[in-house]
Amino acid sequence: QAIDDAENAYISNLKPQLDELSSTLDIIKVDIEAIGTDLASASSNLSAQSGSVLASLLRAFQTTGEISDSLKETADEFDELAASLARAADTGELDEISAIIGTDPSVLARSLAQPVGIERIAVFPVASFGAGMAPLYMVLALWVGALLMTVAIRVDVKADVLPIRPDLTPAQQYLGRYGIFALVGLAQASLVTTGLILFVQIEARHPVFLILTGWIISIVFTLLVYTAVAAFGNAGKALAVLLLVVQISGSGGAYPLAVLPEWFRQISPFLPATHAIDAVRSAIAGVYGGDLWASLGLLCLFAFPALLIGLVLRRPLIQFNRGLTEALESTKLM
Image (cartoon, rainbow, N blue to C red; front, side, top):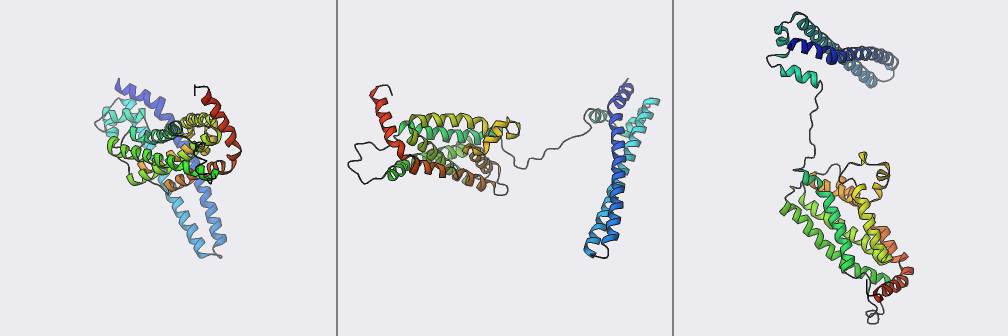
């Protein structure tokens, strides 16, 4: 019965693959012979022009011949294997199969069930699934922290302060008030990063880079959210919440961008969380080709439009936002 099962498995699964491989090897053989002919022709044409080019072509011709011989040997081994299995199936002799697969029948079973095996080598391993998800949740925590700061701290200078310092320009008021947000943001980032390292123990490859990355991310995030609220008032808070929702799905923190819908793949490079997550991931798993600094550089580019809005484009909206805030406060509800 075991022989019959092995014969059926061979005929239905392995033999078609061997036939297909054999035909593929024949095609490869023809292609290699054609390549050899082309190389020989090119060698004869270039022999008088360049000795180094000729030597390179000769080495390539020799290597191609070795590949051809190796493929032929592989094809012969598959033919011998197929013939041995066929003889064992016809005669019912277990010695034939034992000679092929040894004393463990599970070897043949695994070969028939999965002819090709894949060996995974982790180039940038992480300690756990939690460490792999840490970049997403760290970035979300810093964004939510920046958003909550605009709820707890005023983004504008109160009107009763201006008579005391009438020399303060709108730019000075904007930058001076942001200094408070930046300090609180740095404190938040320090708490989050050191907590990940000491309390959660994610085993970051570069702990110092992780803390530095958290500081830069917090400064950029607080600037973006602060500017949105300072320029657009409550509408800026709604905009920050909307960006938070979009960045959860479109930043590539939970799922690779390749498996996300096309719309997310197109907007992902324009989301600050995308580059922030890449930077944190590099600090945790390892830096490759300076990708940490590239991600941080792209993240810092988002600060320029924020400064443009806060220093230049915000001025026409100051009186409008002040009047809107006073009207909302007069309702005793907000």
